[in-house]
Image (cartoon, rainbow, N blue to C red):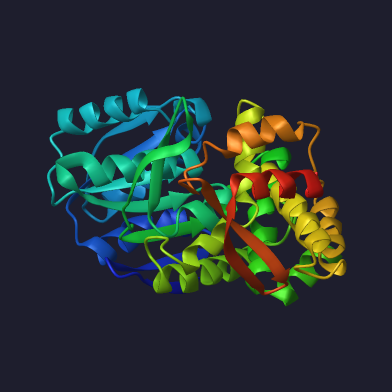
Length: 357
């Protein structure tokens, strides 16, 4: 088991990564929180696979487990209506501020469980138990929780750090190949941000759901450490943490334009390729950088671009939460391991999308 300590300004906690950790989750939760009662929040795909095992592990150490809360799987559930239903169910179970929410599932569950915990009784503790690669390497760490609005993705949310993250890489065996491959978009993004060695490794030997648990644990832990370093320095995304949005301005536009039929990681990968090509054509980075990124993205079977036209992408990009007045903050890759946040006008963003498209 690998332990990564996160020391955000609002809360410090551990991220535990390894094989077979679901069976130990009871003792791990007890040690981290000291709670006597908890409630598992999960969704209709993950719940049947792992909720019983998690609840047994919790009960085995004397933690009372309230009836679980289950919501429909998928991005369409990330709504205020679903959030309200979850909060009503927590109230029905009479959870108190001494109790703990266990968010068991992928990124959607992490968002829903984390935001519900942030809002219920003005804040109860949450333990994130991610079961997808995307959630393990990205969304379960750092405390960002949100739901979508009709106007855009993740527009209502809160920063609410977990008390513990438990990532059991054996759960990745039940992730469909397509979803696992999609999640590699965020892994590649982290490598471009901060780990040239990891980028070389990913290009030479693409990550696969069939990899040995030791490799999966190592890659997940390296990604968590990259995000940990950023979150420790900038918990609320005032500066450095914005670099984690590399590829996201265009990526979120692709995602929204597809009506969320395309996976988040695939959209980030395409957005990363588009912004790196634009940066090279602007002279902000070498022409070798987008070539290297594209090779790694393609090696994982992810898109290096999109058929969605620039005008449509621009429409959705203008509704991105990173917009500031008449401009938007974008993350520009300068070289592997070095990126910067630049404020550009909407006209400049349009030009960059055209250049990288």
